[in-house]
Amino acid sequence: MASFVLLESSPTMLAPGHGLNTRVLESSGISPFEVANGDDVWSYAEANPGHSELINEAMACDASVTRATIKGCPEMFDGVEHLVDVGGVNGTALSLVVKAFPWIRCINFDLPHVVAAAPKFDGVENVGGDMFMSVPNADAAFLMWVLHDWDEEECIKILKKCREAILEDKGKVIIVEAVVEEDDKHEEFGVVRLMLDMVMMAHTNKGKERSLKEWSYMFFESPDLPDST
Ligand SMILES: C[S@@+](CC[C@H](N)C(=O)[O-])C[C@H]1O[C@@H](n2cnc3c(N)ncnc32)[C@H](O)[C@@H]1O
Image 1 (cartoon, rainbow, N blue to C red):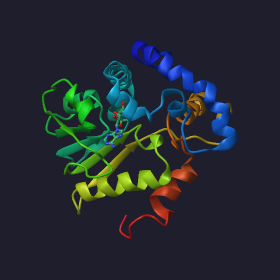
Image 2: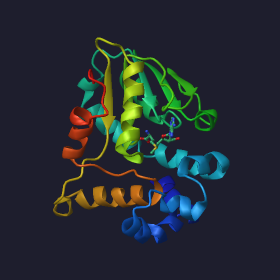
Image 3: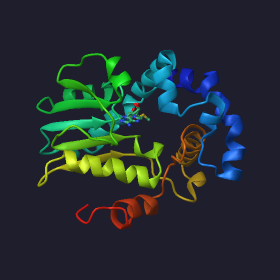
């Protein structure tokens, strides 16, 4: 958790909070992060290795979510022998998957500057690239806390690339994300989900946390989806 606190309390990440009002009032499409720091969050990280390291360490420290996913939904990995983690940062999540399911061969896929700084975990191959261009082939693609950084059109582009990458007959795309609801403030973790939504508002161009209705629309009804999705 310390890495997460260090990231979120850094001047780079705190400054966009002061621009939240313009994002809400104007809906300009440019993130408060870009207004405050002159570039979008991922390009800024590429140009500032110290900040990139802070992000990578903060992301790695949410390993408890990966552990909970493995423990709570082990059946998700049934039949999977080759898995690609899209936006997998430094491979920490996959190192836990390999520990739980040692027969799965894993690819940690992220931007080139991110995987260049990734450690080597047994059973995990690091591959750099752009998920909007292509995703390495595997039986299944894993996306955790990635789609919430993007708007619906961008999410669908990423999902189409995942679909192209996985096995035609038994491939799957495993998505781990928060699901917000309108009355979330009354639920135990509701406030946390709403807070995450504000973080997305401050740090990404059009990213957001989504309700079940919004996720369902994206997966099953959006006109941008290919017929077979
Ligand atoms: C919010 S982090 C998700 C981290 C990780 N999946 C987790 O749950 O801890 C999003 C990741 O997406 C990566 N990313 C952003 N744009 C990308 C792109 N075009 N292609 C591949 N990865 C990208 C970032 O570098 C970052 O590591």
